[in-house]
Image (tube, rainbow, N blue to C red):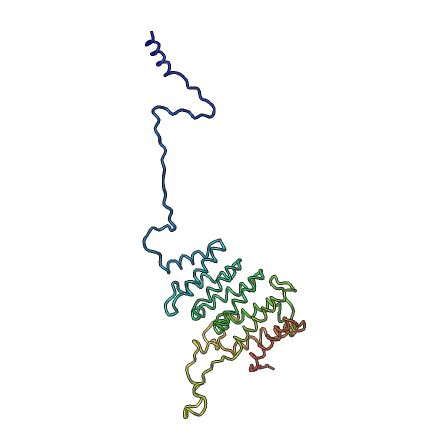
Length: 339
C-alpha cells in the first residue's frame, strides 16, 4: 500500500500547477539553457588602424575642408591649426598646401559672422609669405570691399583692418589691380556718405547701417582712406634713375629709352582694346591714378573733410590727416583745364 501511494503521488506531481508568489521569480525549467553572452569592444581615436600617421599635407588638406563646417569653434580651430603649421614651417621650403589653395579657401571668411573666426583668418593670411599675398591681392580685395559694405558694424570694421594690412604688405598691387583704384574709392565714398554732384556740390548719401553718432567707425574709415591714398598717390620711395647726369656721356637721357618695367607699357593708348570700363580698369601709373582721383573723388572728399573738421575731436584730427595725405599725393598733379 505504501509503495502504491508513493507512485501515485509522483505521477500527480508532474501535472500540478506551480503557484507563483508575488515578488519571487519564476523557477527555471529543468531543461533551461543559458543564452546570455558578453561582448568587449576596442575604442580607437582614429578611424584608420594603419601604422603610418597621416602626413602634414594630408592634415592641412583635411583642416581646409573643415572650414565649411557649420560650427564656429571648428572653423576657428582649423584656422588655428593651419596658422601654427605655417608659422613653424621653414622659410625656404614649400608650404604643406600652396597659397593658391589656402587663400581662395579662407578669403570668404572675411564675411564670417564669428569674430573669433575672422581674427584667426587674419592671423593665417598674415603668416603666409608676402609674395604669395601679392599674387592674390585682387581676390582678397574683392572680398574685403564686400565686407566693407556689410550691414554688421563689426564686419565693416574688421574689413578696414584687412585693407590696412593689405596696403602695408602689397600696397602697389592693391591700387594697381583691376578695379582696385576706382571701385575702392567709390566704396569709401559710399561708406563715408560723400557724393559729388553737379555744380561742385556734395550731399550725404545713405550709408550701410551706420548711425550718425557712430564717430569711431567713421574715424577708422577716414584713416584707412588716408592710407589708401598714400599708397596710390604718393611717389614711390625707391626710384632708380638710369643714365641721369653727365657721367654717362655720350649717352644722354638714357632713362627715357630703356625698356619699360610694366608688362603693357602702351596700355593707356588702348590701340586694339574694346571700350574701357573705368571701374574695372587697371591703373598702374601714378599719373593715371591722380587723374582719375581728381575727376571722381577729389571734390567730394575735400568737401567731406571740411564738414568733418568743423566738429573737432577725433573726427577733426582724422580729417586733417586725410587732407594732408590728399595734398601730398596731388602736389605735383598738373591740372589741364580745357577752355
